[in-house]
Length: 106
Image (cartoon, rainbow, N blue to C red; front, side):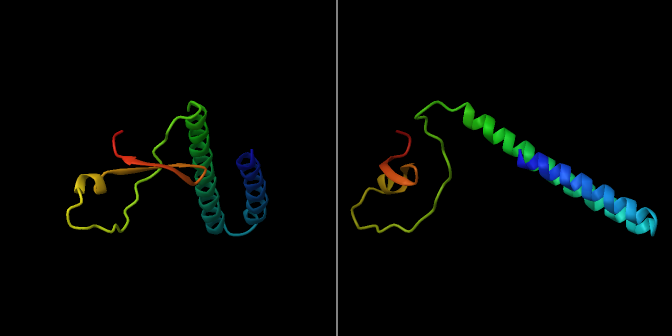
């Protein structure tokens, strides 16, 4: 996985820099070690989040609907229209194409 390779490369670069700095300033060494650890933690967190997303996708059944997001938009409203029909609408997408517009909850 690319994140694993990134972590290995980060570890290698960190060890090289630490070796060079060990011969110099100890304050710079501590600062570098903290930055390296913070970056390492950030990448490990990203890897965990990616693995969780993969597991969630693998758990889906073929054709299963997934709520992606809620969108607020401008609507054209006319006198006499039923507000609940305008307000509570679901738009179903498949491969970024609108395939259905329906009342929410159905």
